[in-house]
Image (cartoon, rainbow, N blue to C red; front, side, top):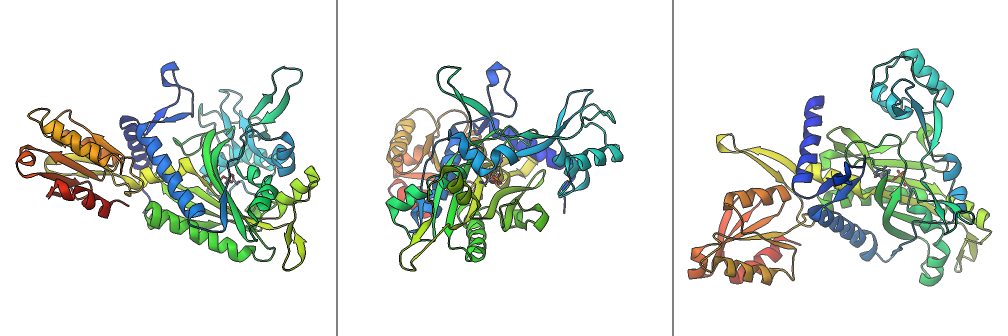
Length: 466
Ligand code: GAP
């Protein structure tokens, strides 16, 4: 059942608040008054990002013999973006309110009013007329009939490459990591001698000058992508496409641990497909503001390699020595946004529990591999040797996991702080520890506490944290 709008907004607000309070995500350039739609990831946020990247790399590169890694430049030759079609086609339709100067992305504006796909297939003129006919008001100032005509806006950030202004060449910050993979297809193929089908994966920053950047970290101008281009023989792309959609869903549910009921696959209708794609599906997550694209899986045919072959005049064909044939492979691409995944993980993990006496506990139920810290060690008091014993245990665990040592405030408050960070286990050292060598270990989700010997602490944790 859909949540009422206020509740949805409230739950996103709570996630934004805990993100700041517990050092996951800070607003960007805050001490200078902020820079809209930029975010900095704090000490716990960067741990979650790194854990997600590591889990993706393990599943998509290390555990397979048919995928290799790459780290290509953010700055690429400008011809790359002419060849890929980004210079001419990577546009969003925009319009301005002449009264209050608010800038709107027309397709999203219409979708918000009339539902998914409302703008699909409409020309700029049709969009302009449709909005006029419906008499839609500006969402900022409420004026009617004050919109400019819809026009195209290219989303790539331009910058200059070169020291002197005269000699500088206009280049772009990459809007996707994928093209860096395509232009290295020949290099990787030559050094690896992999046989088709094989893939190339990379993780890196991408930049898009989004017209309507919004919903916290969901749509930002700077973000990180985890993309993999899987090169296969023409004619086999349909089965690989299905394979990769299933593989990605499996990673999200079984490795990252997202709840299956918050995920769905949405197949693109024919009229929605990009001109180079013969099938595309989005894996969507149920964010507090509704279903939104998390991971795009696209069958891109041989479009990109054909374009780069033609623009660079390099032969990019694959030589199948056994079958004695040369061809441009087809490509299936699972393209995931790391920051959107981070937001999905936060939404999935977040819970406010009402305990006895109306006491509210905020807890992040992260999967153990995703949680920023795995264990926190607390001395009951900062005296009588309890702190020294707790530090000893902390030092002993450090080589194995990212562990926190916390000696400030009441124990209950320290538990609550780590509930909000999503730390799976808290270990308390008390006076009995000094007598019998045992500690109390508390599990985050159940809040159950048990007494175990320090000597078995590591094996206890190894069994429970992968
Ligand atoms: N190479 C194909 C490609 O880039 P895309 O659907 O435009 O496809 C892939 O992007 C993924 O990147 C999206 O599913 C989303 O998770 C993420 N993404 C795209 N634009 C984004 C933005 N402005 N902010 C955050 N994430 C974004």
